[in-house]
Length: 362
Image 1: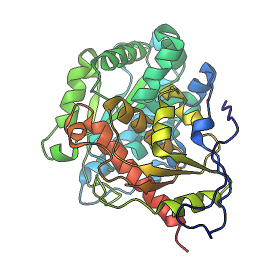
Image 2 (image 1 turned 120 degrees about the vertical axis):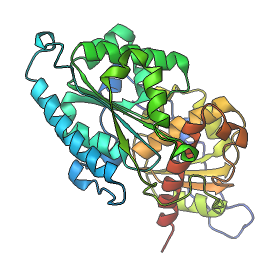
Image 3 (image 1 turned 180 degrees about the vertical axis):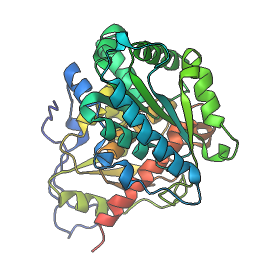
C-alpha cells in the first residue's frame, strides 16, 4: 500500500518564460512512503508486466545464433518436466529424479528474461515464484530464512532473474536457499549477464555463477544464449537530456505522471527500503525527472539501479531532463565490482527514455 502525502510540486510558470502559462501541479514520488505487507512481497513474485504476455511462441530466435532456438526447445521440455514432476510429492521422489535446474548464460538484451518468463508461463504462474535476485534477498530479509523456504517450497518452480555475484554474503544466502529448495524438489531457473566486454570469452558468466554456488553447481544445466542486444543500441547512450521545460509540460498533461528533481528523488530513495520501490510506482504511468546528473556515490547508484529495474519491470517510460544518461555512472563505477548492475541499468534506462521521448512526438 502506498500512502502519498500532498504533492509538493506546485503549479508554476516555466523558468525563463514569464509569459508562458502556468504548469499544473504534478505529483511527486518524494511524497510517497509505501508500506508493503509480507504477503504482498510473495504475491508480487510473478513475471513483470513487461513480459506478462510473453511465451515461447512470441520469442523470435535469431537464425544467426542457433543457441537461441536450442534454448527455447530445451526450456519447452523443462516446462513439461516440471509439470510431470509436480504430480509426485517431493518426499516420494528418488535421487535419480532431481528437479530441473537450468541457468541461462548470455549478454544483455538477448532475451534471457523473455525466456525465463516464458518458462514460468508454461508451468503456470500460480505454481511459480518469479523475481530478481534482489527481490529474493529482500524477501528473506522481510520474512526470515526458514519462512521464506517454507513459502517458496509450495511452488513447483522458482525463477531467479539477474543472479548477482558481486555481494559474497547475498550469494552465499541465495546458494543456501536454492539448495534447500532443490532438496524439497523445487525446480530452479536462473539468468545472469555476461559483461559486454566479456562476450566471446566463453563461459565467463557461467563459470562465475557455478563457482559461487559451489554446493549447487552440479545440479545446474547451463544453456548458452548468444546474440546481440535486441534493442540495437549502445549500452551507454550519448543522447542529451531533454529540455526541462518540455519535461515539466509533458508531465502536466498526464494524470498518471510524477515529476521530481533527480537529486531530491535520490535522497528520498535512501528513506525507502528497496523492497518497496515497486510499490512506490503503484499507479504511475510516466516518471519525469529534471536535473539529471552524474550519481555521486556508489550506495546512491545501487539504489538507482533497483528503481530502474522496477521501472523496466512495469514498462514505465521516463523523461530525463538535465544531462540525461550521459555520464550517469562514473568510469570508476563502470570498472568496479558492481559494473554488471550499472550496465544493465543504463541499457534499461535508455530503452525507457526512448519510450518517454516517443510520447513527445506529435
